[in-house]
Amino acid sequence: MTHSPETPAVTPGKFVTFEGIDGAGKSTHVNAFVDTLRQGLAAVERNVVATREPGGTPLGEALRKLVLDEPMALETEALLMFAGRREHLVKVIEPALARGDWVVSDRFTDATFAYQGGGRGLSDEKLTILERWVQGTRQPDLTILFDLDPAIAAARLAGARAPDKFERESAAFFTRVREAYLRRAEASPERFVVIDAAQSIDAIAAKLAGVFARLGVPGHVAR
Image (cartoon, rainbow, N blue to C red):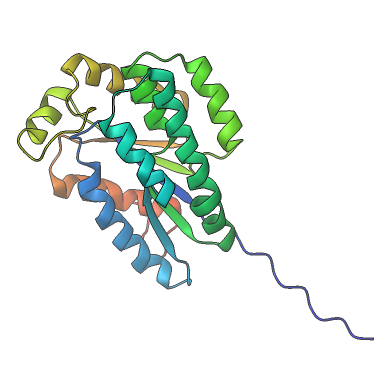
């Protein structure tokens, strides 16, 4: 009797997130990051899934519109964020990582701790309970935090488009959001790369090149 060889296990992919206050410029760089990552991973036949929060799934996108545009109680806002996140994890993130794909998300749970926690004042205790319930031990392998003075961020956003309810918040709100982000980064330095978002686009691109090397992307060598 012969036995067929076992199918080798798929090495899980990696999960990278981009974070920062509105106007910090992360969305300007995330698309270029994804394009470069796809080029590097093509050599090892790995796919890259680009996604975002709130959103990432049809239900998540519907919840995004509610969260960004509709007034609601703070706890309701946080619950909707985590409801969309659970759907995102089940339908997109976890299946992609299990296939060996890489996932790059424009925002994830750190944003909830920063905005609903730091900005709006919901306790970290409540958010941590929801985090553990919704995502278990799942955390990004790497989080790239674009750090910027809220006054500079506000100037960048001025007149760009109709602002959502978060973008209409005060400078004091965004100062609290920024501080919450930096606390998260300080608590998990092995996970975060903090980028000074006041730098030029070229300087930021050079910093991101170092991130590719850190992640072990083919064709990128640590400097």
